[in-house]
Image: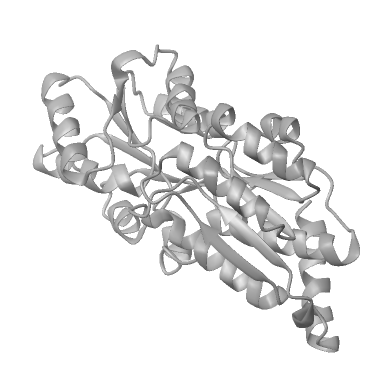
Length: 313
């Protein structure tokens, strides 16, 4: 699959460079995410669609619900479909909320690629061309296996976006790998940094036997790290997180965070634009779905990715 995608991208680049006609096509695509404006993790995907759009000679618009409200996101999908773009790239943050608008877009003949949240099976049910993302339960399970190997018996999963089922799957996979019930080991932290820190601090105070912490992205990792430092547990408690940021990279180097689970969001933004452009122009399409992750970032490989954090990683 990687070779096929590389060939597609290379052919597109060569076509654009040698003939100059690719830039004249000017396809219009819309990427719609579930992320609120405050979620900086999506900057990598925003950068990816800009790079891909420039290379392909296509126009790519990023849209999202400012507060993360999924009903608002559903309306954005409907609005985007009404403009008849050449393709829609969309997250399946909640299948039940979004299935109607996404299916309507597909029924209109608009090519759709789902990314990030959701499953490959859900993508197929919606009639999308493919899904580009990380199997969330499997990623959580992989993180849990690492924790189990380190002797972890109990943990807290700091879920900053509990209304997104994919977030719960990350926590559930972690718990299953440890052979424990998820239960109250998952806390609904919300997005406010002060609230996240306070809730994690309270949990650590009332659960002195907790062996590990799992956060689901920078929004929860950054304030959780502050809580861990305040408790004098930095470097003493196993700490894993999803996704990467410059602060997370620094904490990995310092031994305060053991690993980050990298779903390679750049690929989630970049590849759909390349694929949809080639599909619109030549009718070519890779077969099957694309797993962009999980990969694990540790002290052993952080130097390779640190300089790209927040832009490409």
